[in-house]
Length: 192
Length: 169
Image (cartoon, rainbow over all chains, first blue to last red; front, side, top):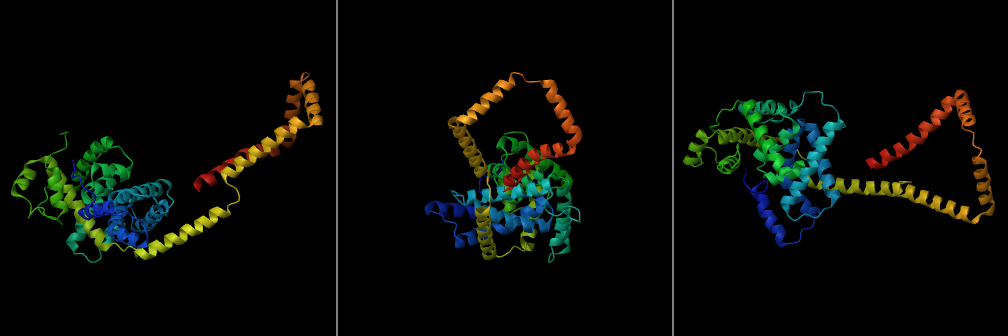
């Protein structure tokens, strides 16, 4: 069981603001929404695809499709869920159809190179996480990322991945066990 | 509580995601995590992924929001123009087929010579010779087999190609 919140506390505040005023996705609103979500979404795509260039491409495509859908959402949470659902589907399609150029490097290797200004220790930790995540299926990576990096609730994860909550729980539990084993399963004393 | 779940896991996750773990977390929570395999596992995964998220967010080079907005607007306009200029859509194909069928029905119902022609064919059908037809078909394939097969393939390939093109749109 996870905390019953939106992806982060900021979105909870925005959701309340949305409820008070009728929301229109004009350019200004989009800018705000983009600034709140783009980096997190990019990180999600980078982790799920294991490739930085794919994440760049899919990020823009995700926002384009989100805008084109022109759907009305009740709140920031619903917009965010919708955005992640689009991103998940795009990543899935890209992998399935191999429409996007096949990476010359192995999946995940590219992500290790993104930390250009971090200390060696942080880069090493990131490489460990990357290697561990490579041992998981893309869907497992996605659900774990949403749950444990984004702090998404079961409902939000199920919505983003197009699954039932009842199916998600055991899969998430197994995926967590798998990742913990791959990470070495030592109790963490400190945050990275 | 299902197996694999612990009531303290949300608290543990909140502490990690809000950077309170372990220094600023409750001593009781830390003691619980030390003795609870589920929460211990959750901490291991959450700390690793949360740290990774921080690093990736910091290094992400996302395009400017305005640029994404205007590119999306331009692309939407281009796609709208392309869609408007597309000569045949599935709806148009169906409408055309319906119109041809309707015209044919009207013609058949009103034309006396056409009805006479139909009667002529119907009377000849009673003396239908299946063996002769089979011979004729065999001869046709023997002489123009490649051409006939090509035409048959075309009948299937063209609608399939149209379907695939429209489905992709």
